[in-house]
Length: 334
Ligand code: UT7
Image (cartoon, rainbow, N blue to C red; front, side, top):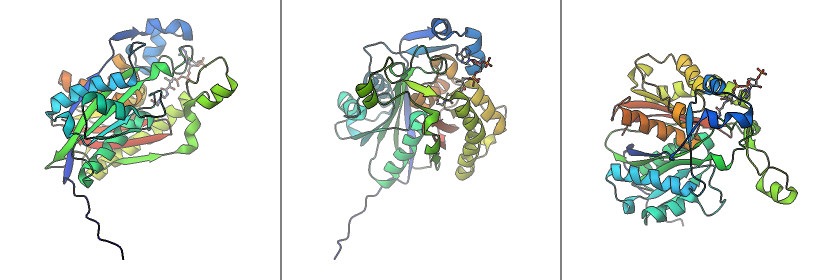
């Protein structure tokens, strides 16, 4: 006879309690990058919107970046580290398949009662993680979740590759998600299309590199136009569905915070969504580059810090990237 199992009981709703950012100190203007890729400041600005980006120091690890952002988010949340039930990290640049960055971060910040796991969803990592955090809290598996999007892409980009070297950069953004009396995270609209796995991938696996060698350590390679077409064609539709399932209209938004992939992709999404002119749009890519899983929380932090978006306002988020994968939801800003 099967026993009756006591189910976990969670909070009715969850919300983002705080956000924190870590931008590495070193500012890298386009002029530092162009020679190796036969490019120009004008080309990079026009095609991507990027003016400068941040690079982490050689001895600054993914875990270091994550810890710095996490400590800011924790402090702003008023939640003690030992109250965190889960440390969830979206990253594709932690250089160890195991152990996870999350376990190390939990230890470093004193989240001694937390489970910890890394999540591989590339540039959608933060929005995937937010959906999971929402369900963990509502399902009762954790009361507070520390969610971090962090990348040190400079370790995995070939500085001589014209398609990626000017685009990708380093950084970390973190949020504390916790219980709420009112809905703070809308239903997620997400998906994956593995048939396009080669659109953003590595030049070879680490195993192939070990066995065959070759002049170049595995680095990112991207079919830029293929990803661009997919993003412009499909991501505005995903955003619209996220608005619809949340019962929120574009007119109600206080901010649109898409993954900072390329300023032209953001502009195309704004047009396709017919976003009213009064809705502020995150344009953090100009000074931060494309930081994959870190880009949405970094952009959120900048909008709140500069007053472009109001605390407690309603924001539409979307992340999309290698997989290909995407996730979008409406949230109440911390
Ligand atoms: O975050 C994960 C998801 N990633 C994305 O969403 C990225 C999506 N893709 C993109 O953002 C764009 O495809 C890029 C910004 C990466 C590239 O822009 P593009 O407008 O798609 O460039 P393209 O590859 O179509 O190249 C256009 C022209 C070509 O010259 P011709 O054939 O028109 O004479 C290229 O040879 O620009 C040339 N080009 C460059 N010129 C200067 C390509 N790369 C460069 C470069 N500098 N770095």
